[in-house]
Length: 546
Image 1: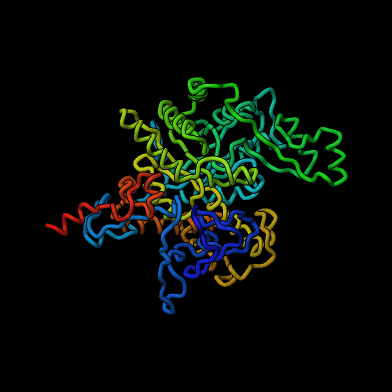
Image 2: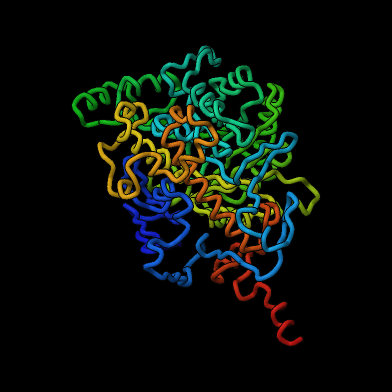
């Protein structure tokens, strides 16, 4: 298990709570005043790649041997000669082989290629209220960066303004808002995906989207996620809203229509209700039945007119993983997102999150093994995205290498939400008239922000990059959360370019499993990534004895 420190003196960062492998707190608060690495990177950007207080310090890495199997126990290889993947007329001159020339653009898909300016996508931002409140920042930021964003499950089902009659959506204002916000700044890079679970299928989400938006939207079937092994949840505090969700067909716990529950709520003994989604495939009992049902769903979506379809699966066991890879490949899907335990959530049972499923690195290692086995049989393997507790540029590199050549994207959930929270809080202080609209939580700038600046132009290193992209007049419509997201993305992009340049790889498709190695024998055994001193050992010995 990874052991992350709560403080990093070199970067000047501090975590408020317990720390995940990702470097984020286990509980990430929208009103947090800092200052983890992702929080600070959302303001000062690529400056966070370097130690603080230059000219007054020297710094040295701790580099202690990692214990157990984790992404921290993978290390990135570097080489002292060569340059691979140079494009756009670049030569092997030292003047060209500089990290800003590393091309981190990627694409995924079968017949239609979906392009992205960097190999990250958001996790699914669905019916949780935090996704709805900060959507403008998430969606505008993702569109400006040029990466895919995922609208999660149940968005229509929980929308009180949505009109659903006999399984057909007549009106879906919240879903429309989600899609339209992203598309307003979409420029050909990235995409918007909309997930569909059991309730969404019953409510006619797929039919509504294709009729209104055509092939502008990618539909994503959902088998699960890394945070939990049951359907999605939200928590509500209003008994009338709980009854509305119950009447719309959801499982609401406790049942708000029971007289004794009503009485307990009135007395204050019950204060909240949990809304749950249903499990899928409950009427199936064999792999072949799952396959037939899955292929039938894909055929139906194709008949509706969907040209791009993806699948999101969670940290089920090896059989479930194999089915996802095999069936998605057979169906010629555009992307398969594999989310390991360690995945984030807006609302999941905590002890379920702590104890269920396959940790990300183990799931991802087996995903590569199964994909390679499929490829060895001459079959075309679906493009893959890895997710589950990944937040930094080194995570991006390691995960891409671990799954190479099948991995095209890295799914990041909570980490790319932090700039949305932070920017909204800053905007709420600097523009008090906008505080409610952007869901700001602060009354004044905390020290972690005030020490950087007192205006948006001073605080966000990426402010003028965004202004250059959209124009000075349009900046009034860009939320500070979106600017913060662009700033974080720039830091991640620069950090990834630096790591790739050190590995002498100047385009993403040249990253291989040889570009990482295991820092302990346990990780080597589980991932089949060679131990540090075994990598190139034979070549080294030939040099010595030649």
